[in-house]
Amino acid sequence: MRLPVRAFADKLGVHVGTVTNWESRCRSVPIALAAQDLLDGTLKLTDADVRSRFAQLRDEHHAAP
Image (tube, rainbow, N blue to C red; front, side, top):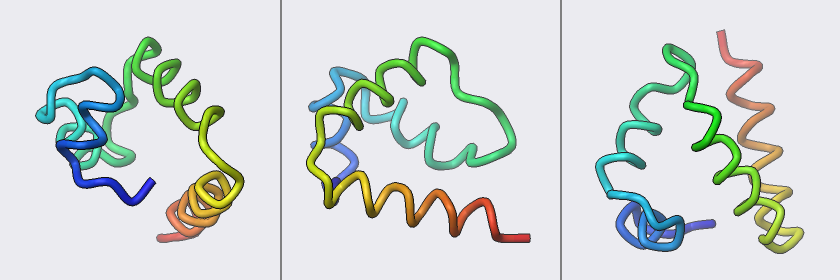
């Protein structure tokens, strides 16, 4: 969504540390189901450009060694 961490956390209604945690964990630790639901719901509400960028980044992340 091209938001600073603080703005993204505010949009989701979570602490900025939570978003920072999600970013730092990457593949090592799965995100809790409630957080996954929150992120999925937020993604569904975004425009097509945001969803397209997300899919591209996700695919690049999964293709990385």
